[in-house]
Structure formats: C-alpha cells, structure tokens
Image 1 (cartoon, rainbow, N blue to C red):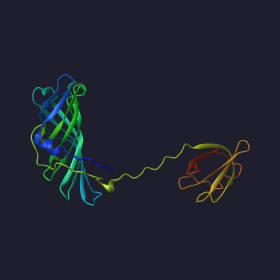
Image 2: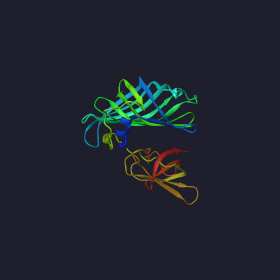
Image 3: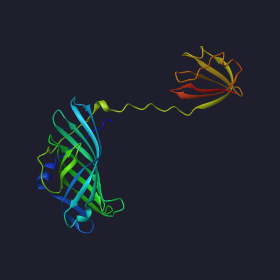
Length: 266
C-alpha cells in the first residue's frame, strides 16, 4: 500500500508548551479538560520494513492497544476502558517518525463514550507529541487538544497526557510517501459477462491446442459467432469437434476480441 502522511503541525509547538485542551459542549460552552492515559496491552501488532520514496529504511507498524484513560473532574465520566488503533511509520535512518490512528473509550452502549482520531510525531526515544479531535456524550460534546505519550511497537502507549504536560519530541514534520516498494499492484480488470452461442461448429483454425486459433459456430438463423482462443481457453481439436457438431459456446469480450471461455457438446 502506498500511503501519504500529510501532517504539518505548525501549531503544535505552541500547544505542547501551553498544554491546554478544550471541550466544547452545547450546555456549558468551552471549558478546560485534562486526562492521563496508558494502553500497554498489545492486542495485535504487525511491523514490516521497507524502503521509502526517499531511499531510506522505514519501519511501519499497525497495532491495536488497550488500557484506560482518566479525566480530571468535572469530566471524569468520559474516562474508562481505552482502545487505540494506530499506524506508526518510523524512519530508522534519521530516527524520525509519524503516527496516526483512532481511539475510543467506554462501551458502544454508553452515552458518555468518547471516540475520535489523533496524529502526531515520534522521535528516537519513542516520544510522541500530537493533537486529538473527538466526540463524546452522543456527539453533543467535542473534545480537542494536544497530547503526548511514549510509544513502543511492542509495549504500546505509556505516560500519556491529554491537555497537560509537555514534550521535547519533534514538533513538526511534513511527510511524503512512506513505502514505494509496498505499492499495491493494480488489479486486473474483471472479464465481462460471457455471451452464449448455441449452434453447429463450422470452422476451426489452427490445431485447436496452440495459439493462435479460432472456432466458428453457426447459430440459429443467418448469424454465426467466431471466438479466438487464448491461454485460458479450452482446447478445440478438429477431431473432437468435427463440422456439424452441436455445441454451446461461451465467449467474453477482452479488449474488443471475443475470446473462448467454455464449450460443451449437445
């Protein structure tokens, strides 16, 4: 997969030092919010290495991590069990990386459930600094602000802080395509719906086994159909399909050429 991280945190430097998050509610306007979190249980983690578009070595990790998040009063109801889905791409040559993902706390049925997305940067020590945007209380509350933590692909997230603390991690990056050698190969176009022709064999060119070659079937009325064989076509040896043999033939249109896909005697 070829993916571009578009992270340009020009404001993170101010956010990391000011350390203020805001929760926007319809009932009480805007108020400060702080929380601590950790997600040290690794439910799933896969890491692969690749060569980046810049020619440097990269490690790309996809992981699911779980733990808890605790909000300070008066927002304590937003805390609880925490699940984080994260993708981290780390340049092992320059010891610089980016991370992004989604999170949720509480169960699906809980009206105070918190969920959203985050993105940030990583330094050589795994220090993360970034920004979080989420919804809570049935989307009636917006939660947004800076966050920091320590991230390790095998141990998850530790010492997480939202709306508090500071970090000496990298504060801003612009990242292009990560893994040029992991670009998915284009999928071949599916073959079109086959067309069926019932009639009698009139002509077979070639030996019916090797390419090139065609088979012609005269259908009812004045019309007839000629289909070309390719490597995926069944064999049509003249000895097996002499002139006058009644058959049902199925052909598909490949780049404007009707190509044999199935033939049965009747």
